[in-house]
Image (tube, rainbow, N blue to C red; front, side, top):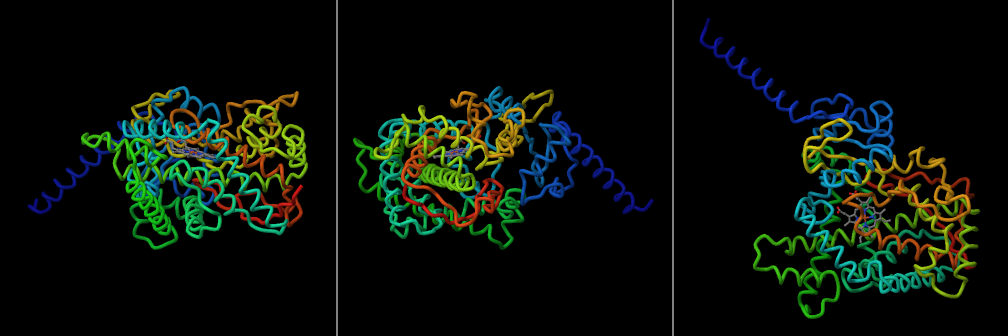
Length: 494
Ligand code: HEM
């Protein structure tokens, strides 16, 4: 045998051994994962998915593989959870194991895990605890915050009244009002609706929510490496994030110049104080980058989710005018026309409360949740999910679970009403997710939704420019978020 042939044979043998070893190692790492479609190299299960309607194709796969299955998004392995029971068993019954954050490369490229949403372990715990405590100190769940929202709702009512029932697209007016609430907690200030740079900021947030949910945003999440080199609209996401970062950074600098440790004015001041207290600790999580990214989290999440929900709410009430009429009647009966709605009113307004819950269930603003990950090797329903595996709790599948809601495909406030018309609490309501990663702004968001919703409906009837039956309530894009189609309406004074 020639020397070169012998060497070639040895090389082939060596390579084969390596492949077998790697495969074995992969199998061991695979644990005993739930079943799922066979992935292709590099592509994973991309060909089985419709990236324009991920939720629908993920639900379709669960019909074949069951409520808990394994999927490959590119080379990333993900366990998908469908339906109330599976999501609850994981996120609530095994809360600690399922509390890790999974990969969201399109956002991680920007935050580098220096925020709450995408951090893990001790860093996440410390930042989350601090943010929750500080939001509470600045009024989350308290009367002072209620007054702030009431004041903002009055500004919004005034602005709408000036339209004199002329048709217009409410998107940016609503988002400026909503954003002002979180702005006053985080930056210590609200902005005038006429302020051009404020409008630019909320448009950047709005555009990014849409782009993150688009085909391009999803493709970046699946193939971050190649997509970083490809031109396309997804690159706008990073430019927009950068503009938002510069805005936050500028605000931080302004705060530093007028900082008085004995009298913190807002979230940024509290963070600066913590940075000062821990500046000798090299392991501290309180530094400028975490300050900017955590502030950015609150600003972004606090603006877009609530305003998108309100936009969904108004279009649904125009589609179903009989439901709008019942909300009007309840407002007239419980609050009347002359005083501002207050958080206390909610307990006496079961119908309106049910409508808001149903808007959140049906609108499904974050349909796939935000990816989780298991923090350790985890036994779940007879499977073994290896530490670090991503988990997708399909919140949409919970909201459309026929074992939990009588007629999930229909917008019907009765889903949250008992037979005597009282409000019916429902464990399968998971718009804010559940478990240890549950939305940090839930208390604030609930209060905002109730007060904005009732304040506007107290003063206006919302009427569409087309016949109710012609209103399309399907989302414009569906991905990370469900984005409602743009529409115009008339706010007719009552
Ligand atoms: C209707 C409004 C809102 C909805 C539907 C919503 C929904 C969600 C969802 C589904 C998650 C993911 C939870 C998980 O990983 O399981 C989340 C996380 C989060 N939300 Fe919200 N949210 C809303 C409002 C807000 C507001 C007003 C704020 C800010 C004050 C906020 C801040 C956050 C933060 C910081 C996280 C990350 C929590 C963590 O990873 O520990 N959200 N939200």
